[in-house]
Structures are given as C-alpha cells and as structure tokens.
Length: 127
Image 1 (cartoon, one colour):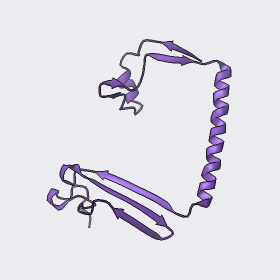
Image 2 (spheres, one colour):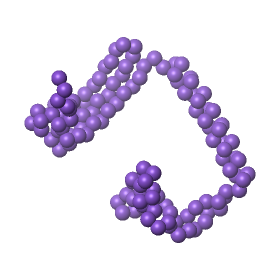
Image 3 (tube, rainbow, N blue to C red):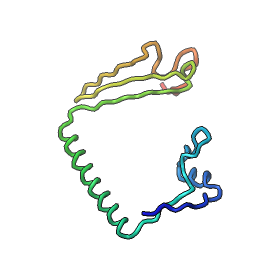
Image 4 (tube, rainbow, N blue to C red):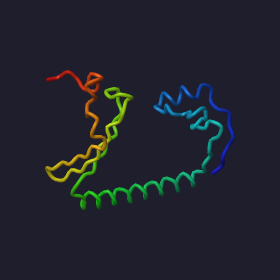
C-alpha cells in the first residue's frame, strides 16, 4: 500500500455532506482528510477482502452464540429535548426479560415527555 499526497477536491465539504457525513470539521479542524489517498495492489485488495470475510464470519458466529444464550435485553436512553428547561436529559436504563420490563429513571424530578411549565413540547396532542 502506498500513501499518495493529493490536492483536496474542490468543494469537498459539500460533496461529503451529500453522503451524510456532516461532521467533517470539528472545532475548525477537518475530520475528513482530503490531502491523501491510498493505492493498493490487486494482491493487497484480495488480502483485505479475505480478512474482511473471515471477520464477518467470526462476527456472525459470535452473534449466534449471544442470541442463543441471552434471555434478556438491556436498554438505555438519554433523551435531550426542548420539553424541559435547558433541554435537560431524561436518562433511563432498563432490562426486559420475558414479559417483564423494569426501567430506572435517574432524574426522578423530570417528566418523561417534557415538563408542564414548557407545555409538554415533546409529545403530541393525541387522546
């Protein structure tokens, strides 16, 4: 593999945003680097593909073991929205096993769908 120095493409920020990469620059520093590219030989590409296929096989094998052994699901949510003063979070964690669900709210003074004083801004007006 060879690293080649290149000129960044014109308007590269707009181009990568079209593919969904909107965090290409963080605090004024580019995260996405357009100043280099990499050149591979056919053999190097073949090796990468073989390694990728083996990694994928191992991942599927592991997932199969986890699914076979697991009898519960862990959940977590950290919800920040305009329905609370200062857009405060509503952190919860939980566990589901069979038909049982246990949730723990770590900020018990906060309402799950927004606060009354802000007009419950994170819920709709359905009955």
